[in-house]
Amino acid sequence: QPSVCGPVCGNGLVESPEQCDDGGTTPGNGCSATCTVEAHYSCIGEPSVCGPVCGDGVVTIPEVCDDGNTTPGDGCSATCENEHGFDCVGDPSVCVAHCGDGIIAPGAEQCDDGNTFPGDGCSFSCAVEGGYDCTGEPSTCAPH
Image 1 (tube, helix red, strand yellow):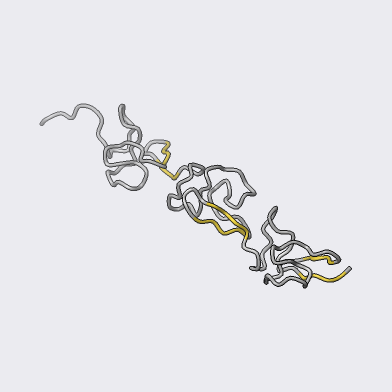
Image 2: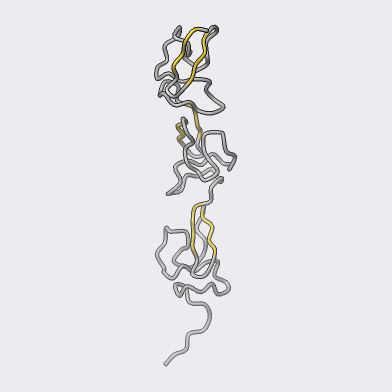
């Protein structure tokens, strides 16, 4: 029988010069068919477990967004999910509060009454209008 010398990609053991070995040779899951870490992934352990790199500015499934950082409160969370009241699109993701959806985006909206009509206490840009107090989600505004 011929002997096998060197690393065997797909056996679940990370043997030099392999960067990863997830126990298979299927590409597209973070560890390539040649046991190298694929772009926008990181891998740990034996057998290797690979996942997308959150914060690299590229949306890699199962990420919903990736704005190039892991700073919370900017619309895309530290785990690359849309934060409450924000919509995110693109690579890197650009996140904006969706005024008029009835959800208050923290740090970006003072109120959100489910519409963008001015004069009802919550403005078209989701700011509390002068002379009003707004509470709740969706916001209910009343003169004070």
